[in-house]
Length: 276
Ligand SMILES: NC(=O)C1=CN([C@@H]2O[C@H](COP(=O)(O)OP(=O)(O)OC[C@H]3O[C@@H](n4cnc5c(N)ncnc54)[C@H](OP(=O)(O)O)[C@@H]3O)[C@@H](O)[C@H]2O)C=CC1
Ligand SMILES: O=C(O)C(=O)[C@@H](O)[C@H](O)C(=O)CO
Image 1 (cartoon, rainbow, N blue to C red):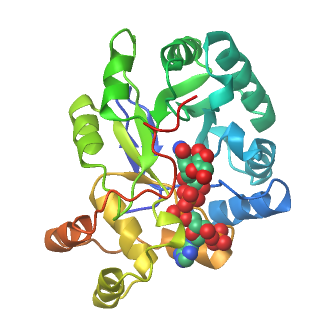
Image 2: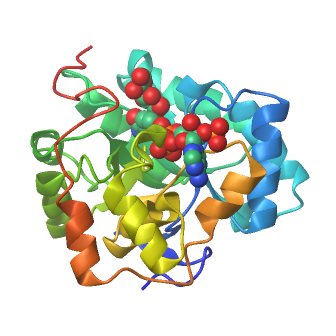
């Protein structure tokens, strides 16, 4: 059982990654994201998920530096965006992200989307940066089983993490199973289904049963199914609510009831259709 906000999963290269963190997609650069990161750190969060796409890396870096935490006390993830895929482009994109974050190294660097045919070259760039110790762990995002299999054909390192859309309406059975077998840590994006599932009667029922909120039930379900979770909020009360999931656990029967809500329903792109 994951017992504390500081608990970590040990990735396939031995790096510790917090089970719980803050996502900052759509958190505006400047005060909005800086305040969210400050509140989160005060509340005990130790992992932040950003991306070049989100255009807030500089503010995230600034907020972490001014929080007073030592660099090694925070786990920073960022991602290479689709238009920067390819070997040389990725090396350049990483350097841009690293400078914006104003850090010597990034904890986790992900290929944001697989796309059509550049992800192998992109992966070679991540492997180089990993070997050179600019990145502590390298991974992917939105990869289906077939993408992972194709990547494995000539990769030196197995991805440490696959970050995919994951919530009760999209339980990713095949990807989850494959990642378990390959020791790839699954990470949930959109864990709250971007707010669209919190009034579901089952979640409301379970919230009453456990004395929690529907958001807390869903986030606990992530942890109880061994999936790293990074809910986004820019509001202190919600940041606190979302993090308050370490004093209970769901029964196996309730875990299965939530899993049964699956309808393979996405809020974002289908990686097999989002081609570039
Ligand atoms: N790799 C990828 O392709 C993707 C990665 N991500 C990452 O995953 C993170 C999380 O996913 P995201 O898409 O943001 O969606 P989430 O499922 O985390 O939902 C975020 C939305 O829910 C609201 N919210 C947060 N907490 C609560 C609460 N307790 N009660 C009610 N509403 C709440 C937020 O609003 P408010 O801020 O106003 O509180 C926001 O509108 C992203 O921020 C990003 O870091 C996301 C999408 C794709
Ligand atoms: O937030 C991200 O990291 C994304 O890649 C997505 O939000 C994606 O671009 C999308 O779903 C846009 O609607």
